Image (tube, rainbow, N blue to C red):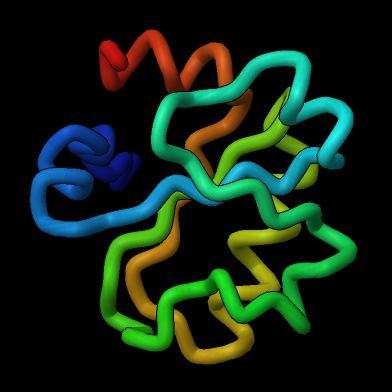
Amino acid sequence: MGFAPAPDYNQMLKEGGVIVDVRTKAEYAGGHIKGSKNIPLSNLNTSPGIPKDKNKPIITCCASGMRSASAKSLLKSRGYTNVYNGGSWTGLNSKIGR
């Protein structure tokens, strides 16, 4: 069916990738992945925290995967090429073992 292999998030992070958590500041304060950047989805268009290098790996996450999917689409529409929806921050955290 043409399924792509699962992304290697650890390798992306080793190559300088960033995790962007698009939950609200209050949600982020309640728990987050160590080293992730908190840029709420509503601020994604205006945030200086997004990497300038549009080829740098960006992994988005949120509470359930819905907002991170929206963030991925938004970043792709802005020309970012290596954007991945990591889904929920707890699920992503268990995959990268931080």
